[in-house]
Length: 576
Image (cartoon, rainbow, N blue to C red; front, top):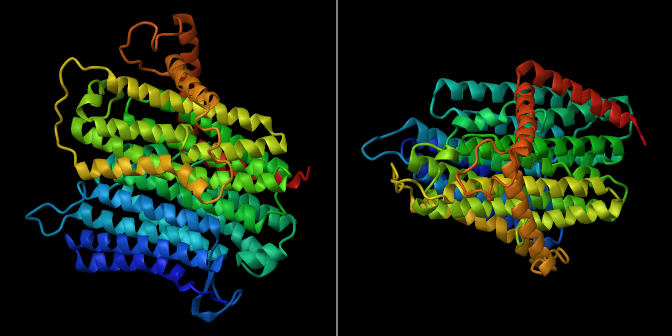
């Protein structure tokens, strides 16, 4: 039955799409005004959903047309859906404020293409994400994912250049390939069980050939949309030419839609079907993403591409929760799920802030070459501060949400005896620190001459980016107030502070070993490694960069998707 407050779930989906229609109808500079009003209304709805769930003490349900499944469609919101809905709303607000400077209709112009398209697509993405979060059946989720894809792809090519159009088509075609795999799996489940409602499927589903094939197909298709290594063909090129606000949406929010559906699939639909080997395979892909993404990020000449490859690495963290959750301990499963959700929210806010800071630096300098950032720390202190704070949050230093997420995941690793994921998370933090320290070192080096910005950056845009970075840092405090036990205990102890110092120093050493371009610091800084050692490490880093290039070739990416589906199928049949 529809619960009190359930109508809010429908409004969370409908209101952004009403804003899209109103923006197109009114056109011109009115599209931005409609978007601002809709963003405020959407944030209010998300807060109202949270209040309604707090009053009822449980989830919300809304039956469309009053018809219950399997004849009708139900919208449902539980704890994970709620926290993601709130996070999406906060990030959309930050991006909307940031984009006012870049996508305002110029004075004296009745209508401009880029502002009209951006504001309507931003609202469409928000509506599609909310539909992903509250959908109660697998086919509605498929529709939501397609809406999300078709709204996100045009953001990549807003400037209309040939290379950005090529990147958008690459994204579109690979995402559609993933959709075909997902839809094939949904068809198999419907043929076997006669329903696609998540609650009904969870009660009926049993291990069998059709179920295992569906699980492998759907998981593989969703990983292609999430851009998990080796299926990251589309992500770096998509960010290369996209506006900063669009990159913030793509990296911070869009990839979370398909990832959240993987969570729904594994935790709600197929928990009794999935096996330890399949969970370990998913974790291994996450570990590969952390290694490859971080090392290739250190090899980039452009700041925006560095942040893009950082996203490739951070996606890997989101999948470390699966082997920990399905390691056999019920308590570890709850900790792993909470840690994974908190990691996703922390990444959404921090990565959006990082892309926004990089966009402001590009606007001010006319380029984003890392080697040319000398003097930026003095010229754009708020932008550099935002980048560093977002990097600190991604590293997992207290009191950030990623620190609490890492603590929960490490606890699950200890509970299940999976020490190797502990090692992966610690190494990932070190690699993340390496590129943050590298960029900071370049930015703080005094330039030969004072940096003269080519364009003024909006103070409002700087404030929006900084606010999102601070939100990511404050998530740890929010988790503590929400009742997550002992999340920040010992965060300021000498051992914890010493660990943070070791992480930063270790990151500098890793950057010294692997970065392609080092800032002009005195000997003993980034030149801590001798020439023979550095030559060896550079060979390793170059080999990983070449591997990335091969993986992003169309034939290799297509074969990788097929091979991954087959590997998942084999892992699912291994019941040990």
